[in-house]
Image (cartoon, rainbow, N blue to C red):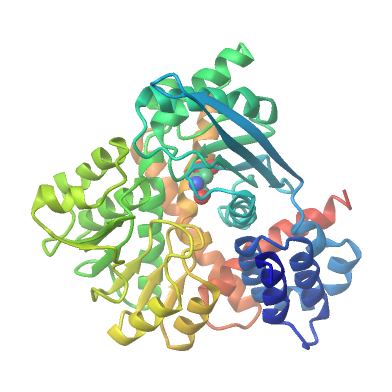
Length: 469
Ligand code: 2IT
C-alpha cells in the first residue's frame, strides 16, 4: 500500500475520540487526517493538542462548532513555498525549497523561527507552525504562530555559501514579512550569523532600516541581550517552577541533555550555574558522557562546535577526553534526575520511554519542539514520569523574541538583568497559568493537558470574537 494512504488510515484508526461522545473533536481529527495524507508530524501535534482540550470544548461546544473554530485552527492562513537557487564556492548552482507557513494571527502578528535542515518539508513546517500558535499564546505576549525554513543543509558549508543562501532565501521571503505582519527568527541551523545575513539582505531590498522584521539579531543592530540564551534559560526556569511545585529544587540534580546547539548551550550554561550537573550532550553522530559535568569553558566550546558547521558531537569528547557512544542517544543509557531533549522532534520514542521508566528517571523536561512521540508521552505519564511539555518549556525563546520586538519599537536596549528578569517572570507565569487552568477544569497536575488547554483557550476566544474569516 502507498505510504500516504497508510498515514491517513493510521491517524483515523488512532483517533482517540473514535466512538466517544466528543464527536466534534473526532470529526475534525478525521477530516484533517483525510486532507493531509502525507503529514504524519502535523497529524501528531493536531491529535496531541486536540486530545487535551476536551474539557474546554465540552464547556463551549455550540459556539466553537458554530464558528468552525477547530476546523479553522487546523487550516493555515497561508502556506508559502518557493525556489531558493544559490551558488557554492566552486561556482556550481543548487536549488533548495523555501517555506513560510503563516498559521494563525488571531492574537498577534505571525511569529516563529526559520529552520535550515535537510529534513525540512511542508509537514515539518506545518507541525512547527501549529505548535508555535499555542506556545506563543502561552507566553501572554501578542504573537501569532508561523514557521519557515528550507531543506538546505548547512553541514560543511562555508560562511560565504551560507551568506549567499540566506540572501537568495530573503529575495522571496521579504515580501511576506514585516513588523506587524510576520516576524521570523532562528531555529535549527539558523542562529545569529544567519539572521545577520538575512537582515542585511532585507534592508537592502526594503530600502529602510526596519529591524523589527526579524528577531535573534546581533546586539549592534537591534538584538536583545539574553535572546541567545533565552530558550535554554527559560527551559531551566520553567523546570525550577515544576520542581518547586513538587517540593524540590534544581541544585545537586543530574541531567541528560541531547543536542549541542543554541538550546542545549543555554540550558547547560544555566543548569551548571545553578548547581546542577549536565552529564551528556549529543549530535547526529552519537552522545558524549561527561562525568564531571558540562560547565565553564566546556559550555562555551558548544558555540564553537555550532559555528564550525561540522555537526559532530565527537569533537567535544576528543577535546575534553570524555567517553563517546557512537550512534546512540543518552536516553536509557545514562541515569539522571532529569532528561532534557534539546535536539529535534520525535527524539524520544516508546522504546526510549520504556528504558527511561526502567532506569527510574522521574522527569522529562521537553525542550526541543515535539521531542516525544504521542505513544511515549502516554507511556511515561501512565508510569508516573512527570512530563513538562515543550510548548511551555521552550516558550522562553519566542517570549524573549517578543521582548526584542518591544525594544525595537521603543528604540531602546534593555540591560541583561532587565530582560532576564522579565523572562523569569514569563516562565513562572506560564507555570501558574497552567496550574490555574487545570484547577478551573478540576484536573490533576498534568502539564501536557494544562499547557494545551491554556494555549487553546486564548486563541479560540480571539477567533470567536473576530468572527469567521
Ligand atoms: O521554536 C521556537 O519557538 C523558535 N524557534 C523561536 C521562535 C522565535 O520567533 O523566536
